[in-house]
Image (cartoon, rainbow, N blue to C red; front, side, top):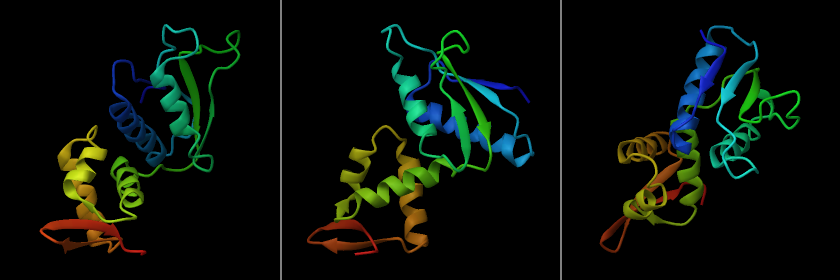
Length: 154
């Protein structure tokens, strides 16, 4: 298995999904050695959009991984980030499900949910909703003529 993953040219969602798949496959095989995430630096001189989004994503998982964002350009390439795995990350569908659950604190129609998460493919959104219903974390009911979804902790 390679010691790097190149995310150039991917959207944020594609990049996060590819990263999670690569990361978890390493962890599942017991490979906890550091690896490089190549995201590019961007042409703005302050860091690219993908770089910022990847670093933001990584910072959400301090118990699962460590990372060095290459702040010292003499030591590291600022277009890549060194990641040290510790534990598996949640699957991408689990992350989407959590976002949908948060969004549905108040009742939302399917069209509102798919509109909010339009960057994801509709089958992934529907799969997330189905998973949440199966877990009884979200409920659906009719509000007038519309079917709505709401997190079940209300």
